[in-house]
Length: 382
Ligand SMILES: [Ca+2]
Ligand SMILES: [Ca+2]
Image (cartoon, rainbow, N blue to C red; front, side, top):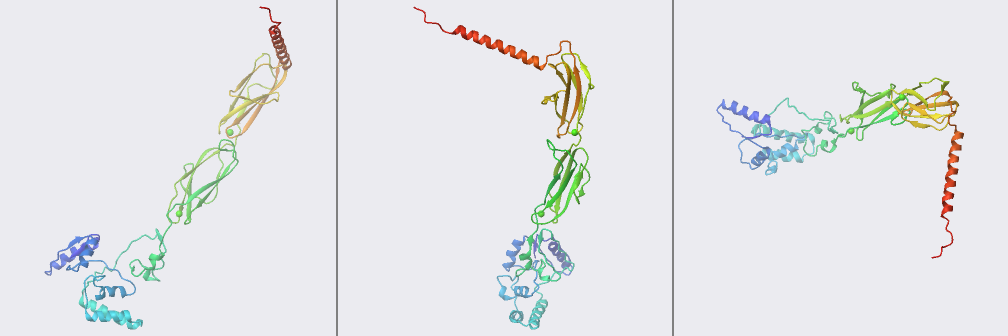
């Protein structure tokens, strides 16, 4: 007995037959072989018995044909033929009347049964398992039994209708609404809207996790209202179950201006030529990015430390402003109204101009003196 090695059930059946038939004195020896080897063996018609697999169409033509002489050296497994079978089979394929044709078909089955050239191994609770999620187009097998997978002969519509389902994951884009400041920081609350899309299917759901929270199904835009750096992770799944790789969105919010406080009080009188002004400043959000100061409303000058030493200020009232910027672009100022009162009166702007002018006059006079000295006289006799 030839048995397919690919079929565990058939190997079990062979073992069972050997065991049971031995009880009534029938010895069976079986060879387990590949289906390819079994096919070559069977179609050489040199075997004794074998176990193989057949399937059937809804229409009986295919199976009756395989038991007819016309399929010898073709689909016939066993070179079976009897005149009665051949006559009924030939009439069954020539008859157009359904009821009449059924008679010929039934006759073929009767011959088949009585001659027992095949023994049908029937397993009532035959179980099939296959995935329906990787292809679409299965149709309704109850309404159309011919579509089922075990009716494959003569171009089962399944094989024309089945199409691979969606194999690619969806994609999710995050849309951010808020007031974008500097360096990627937002200076307002932020609303994140997630848009999932799928090229060849439809998005089943979008999931998100905010600052390491449990994964939640996205239903409405996500409002982020707290200061600081937040991490939003998200992904979508399509109807086929394809899952997008997780994406990460970092949202940094800093809506609060830095703090700044000049150490001196308004009205402070400085009696030294070097006026020291210091302040405290910090920013708990994006941090202090840079500082600048202005004297008496003039242009801002950058400064790195929280103090300046001012010289060259004339005696009298002055104003000082320090402006502190955080990395998000928020800024704040503090001002100081102060008085300079030094014994020598300081060096006013006017006196500076006069000193520079005097220096320039000296320089011009020196250059003219040098040029006059170099003026060549008449050539001296040799
Ligand atoms: Ca997809
Ligand atoms: Ca800030």
